[in-house]
Image: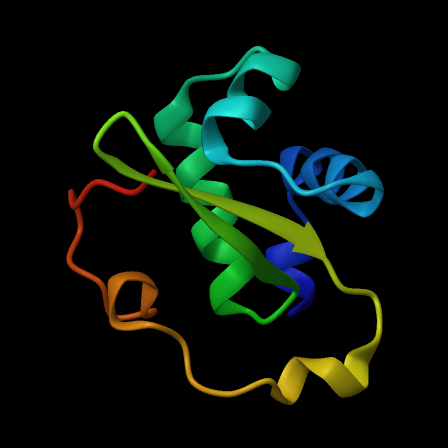
Length: 96
């Protein structure tokens, strides 16, 4: 877990997610980074159980996933990860 939290960009993402849920696209705009980079760091935080999936909304024929920070460690045992975001996910697959 410490390794996941050691990245400075992930700390900035957590700071934003504490206030309100964000999608990868919203984070990329807010932090001036690529959507791919935002998606990557969201996946890392989610796989480590640091953030949770707050909502899924339809957007332009696909799904927009919005994440939030959950500071309560007791909530980290929320259950299995969805297949689309498992830690063993193949490299290069799109997320967003």
